[in-house]
Length: 76
Length: 431
Image (cartoon, each protein chain N blue to C red):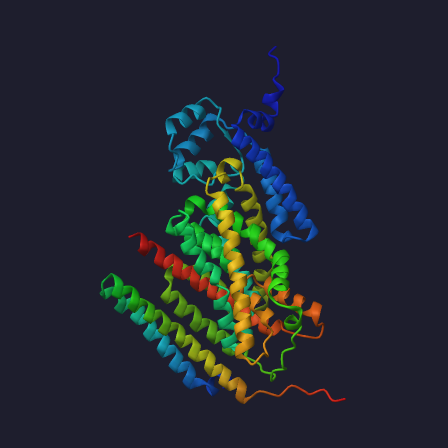
């Protein structure tokens, strides 16, 4: 694991877990239900999977913020 | 000695004269349109990489119509599943009076006829093996992937995602409008995808959902995409006052998303999106393989995808789109409707993007330049460049390109997700 990913490892793990759970709900659980419930549960699963990707982005963003360098200020 | 009929010698003219008035004027009009596209491409008003081969293809296909020999004509008539008046066509074919070209026959589907035509029509192999299965669209997408830096999205996720979603207004709203105007769900979804402003996505969606109309839909899409570069600046000037266009955004801390993070994110992203939308998996794979190659630093692969694959696919895409514009193929009563819906989709997406830009401007305490919103329309990198150009005209030292590229790249991913949603949902609606 590279230092950058290690610094936000919890977010990566949580994001991947959330995405897998979302995919499982959308592709495995939803087909077990009838028409309308099928669509609703599939949509919930898809949103959950996409929010998993969002969690990973948040982790990277957090690392970037903690390591950010302020831009040089121009003085007269 | 038999006298020579010069009209038999110059069959392009004979077929023109003997065609019904609609086809006659259609062929002449399309030849003229081809010349206009070529000229505008050369002038740089429209995208020259597409318009020059496309314009020339349109001219050649509509000029080069001849009477096909009975065997070839028979294969075209028998091999096309949708031929309604087959007995009449078969008689015409057998008499050697059926007009056609030696370029390709896009509507033929039966394997035996396709095998025969591949030995006659010079572009048929390219069309069958690379166009009708979406391979060219995927090649172009692979090239786009190599050009994308997902770091811009990761550095500004909220803004990028918000603007990209706002700029999908046309993709969402055009669908019910098209249904109300009489298109079936597959056709409506395909023309609505023009709002995503991504040619390969429109091609892929229409090939999957509206095979009967994929030619006019794709041609309309590419014609309009060429216009975004010329038309969007006027829309920006109309909707955003000069004072706001010149708004300087505060400098942000210098951050660097590592290539490992970008690679890992594209691997997880590709896997999750393919698991969710398997019907659009070829598009996701193509995009993310480009991103992965870029972030892995595989220089030889980057050179191949960025050069021969992207530009080769673009050239053949333009040429085949032009060749598909043969009057008898493209003159469908629905074309006018598609032209109107296409412009509505693109216009709504641009307006949605700019409204998103305004929302970002207000929510950020008037710090974000609203012009960035137009970059949410995923025509990479044209809309981001248009946004920066319009801002620079008012305030030359105002830089919005990093934020605009973030929204732009996120727009590509969002459009691919919308393609996946449409391709997955429309067949379910039809059941």
